Image (cartoon, rainbow over all chains, first blue to last red; front, side, top):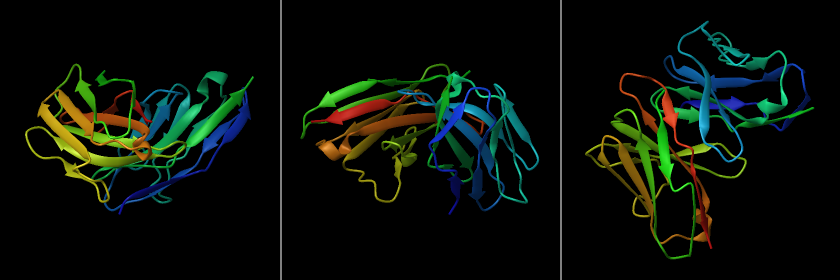
Length: 109
Length: 115
């Protein structure tokens, strides 16, 4: 079945550092790919998405490119802020929704 | 954008009692809603897919008699945890699909603690 594998955390960075959270997937067909963010005590919020190969999703300085050849959708941000501290989930939508295990990011001032 | 609410946000109940959690789509009609369970520091586990006017579809390993799902209208789905036990303590999250849109919109979650 479809699955998502993402980089294990936790990840701790200093403010203004570069962020990469790796995500790879296995799926039959052509799924849509998502990154969700979960702040403490809250539900998931959609951060960005890509619906087909080579699409780049972007939002709030975060980017991810749908790479079919490497079955990846890595999340990147050039300069993180303390307010980016949260748990990030990679997900795919094929026949149903599948989530990665989540990566906790802590950004220190 | 599409908004999904859940009620209550937190609930504490005693072992053996039942708890109902509501999931509402506030500004759109959702023919399909999903219920997830999230364990501490873990990902979301899909429990069931709730279809308006029909029986829910449960994922393998999820007891349908314990987790009762009712999708009575296009804006409301409920999850009832029956005869709750401490191991049912978890964060329950619902999501809903906007018709014709691929992404799901998530509720803020309900933290259930069974004592």
